[in-house]
Length: 336
Image (cartoon, rainbow, N blue to C red; front, side):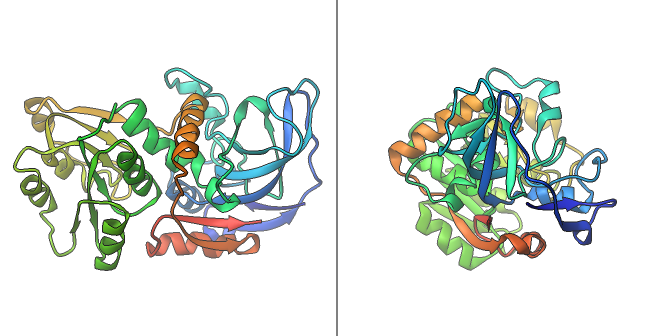
């Protein structure tokens, strides 16, 4: 089988297509013939060697993918041959609150990921995906979608009439927009592109702000909410946008810190958090329980993820370079 592997040093040039023997499932495991995989910004950071602690190489990258079960090991009961499933981001996080040890089971980082024609996973680490989704659409769910669901629904308890602020047009932000609309919430969005702003409005955002032409976008958010602030910010920017998000949220509102696109450390306005009684919560994807609950909602509403562009399996490097360009609107997918 063909496998993409990060070799001895970080960098896109280190991502190499190699051949390995087809794996066989052990007791409790399932063998997946992969159909599609999707990219997250984390995958680009891992490939470039800028994601947190030093990665152990070689490594098969990518956490998100969907495949068909083609063989099962002894004792497997949760899935059957022929089922279409996706792996959960952290293979050991089944339910309940996050624990530090779960991070050691994160696909495409702590352990080998899904950028291979065949992948073996434990049966507990996979979920069935909604039937109405294409393989490309289903492959987008494990990280970005679960993260947005965790932030807004599981932890955020979003309700009809609430107002959500999303930053940019990456996977998490667009899933947050879609989930917010499912429950009847209002969405304000930001982008650096007028073209993308038009698409955000078409997707259901009530307002969208170009943060290039309106650098004080937090003031624009304040005015749009009649100087009350939004109920919830899905904060994917990190250091460069965090204090602006604090100014955008209402008294007693919530900021879900998810991404570090503009950096991982800066001076934080702790006084604003205190004075406005803001709940700040770090969101690190989610559990299998969250994933299955989210899938029920997606299936019920026949929701379709936003897929920007699909690359063939052989062009994984080009897909990562496209992500680095920032030109995408939604998810980038690799088809096997």
